[in-house]
Image 1 (tube, rainbow, N blue to C red):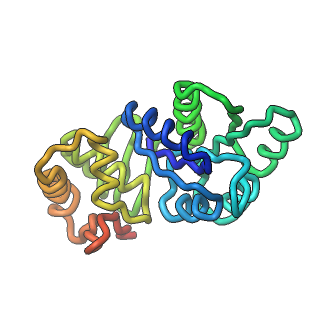
Image 2: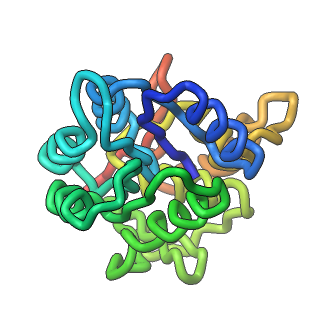
Length: 224
């Protein structure tokens, strides 16, 4: 998972960084509400772990602004040192998906984040459509103009990541992290797999879907 933690306590940030990275998750951090909101909007995480009491902009306002401005649903796990019903109701009213009271165990936080990352997909179709491209996530199959694409596992995972992020551009580092976590090969790990993906996705057809955004990364370009 890609988890963004917005927390002003340095000791807690350090502890969470160690816990999340040890479990193979990508963790980004912000120490104040405004910075956290900017990061969440610029690069939406799988889960936002959001402290209630933050300098600059508190967690409730961060959550409200996120719900107003984000182009997708970002699951929010609210952290607080307070355990009153009113605090929890305020958090849910602002758009939080779950609540965790400090102090907490790192394993519980990860478990809740995993649950949230899956929950927001409930009701979502197994099928993704981008122009002539159709991806069936249940069968792990991709077709273009109805033609089944012969894809090995890693090129398929790259295609799926780009399709789920569409129309956003994914950076090279995002793709590497998504595919291999912290265990990426030492050599250029994407080059061969991107070549194989292009051979299957674009070469047999008139118009390419896979675009290189120079200096940024890669994206899919709808041909509809």
